[in-house]
View 1 (cartoon, rainbow, N blue to C red):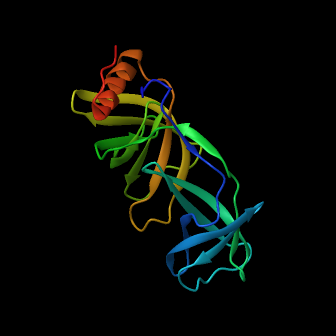
View 2 (view 1 turned 60 degrees about the vertical axis):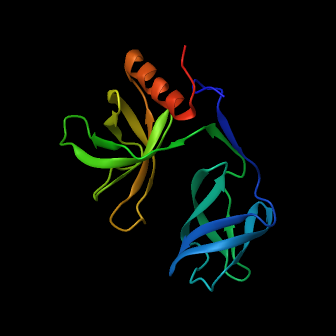
Length: 195
């Protein structure tokens, strides 16, 4: 498998028996999918305090990847939530923790750490206050071979993680040499060589 666009993760429609996690009060509820038909019917492992219309975060896993979706409660009993993206195909994310930093253009640098990394973007954690969705940012990631720099757009933000919000940045405008260096590092993680 390559790192230049061929490596994809396909997350199929939720199926009965799949284990998922939902961020609700009083915490993160492990759930089992009971069924899917426009909404996701779930059986949580404990009683959740959720009302119709509440915003929740759904986490699904596939091939070592974590997928997060902002959803809404559509029923309390049985527990059911929206499922806005039932099928997902995306570039493979490499789970790697590296020092990184981000800033708004012309602003002060904020320190953070990557959670995962791909050719097209990254997921990172940073102390509050974090960036906002849709915001233009500059990012730097400390690769073993040097610093990867790129401009980007904040694609999503999870503020519910206490004191350490996660956010996703889609790269836009990295230097071609920097992209090649990033590809070489991702290939190294796979034990491959970029030609």
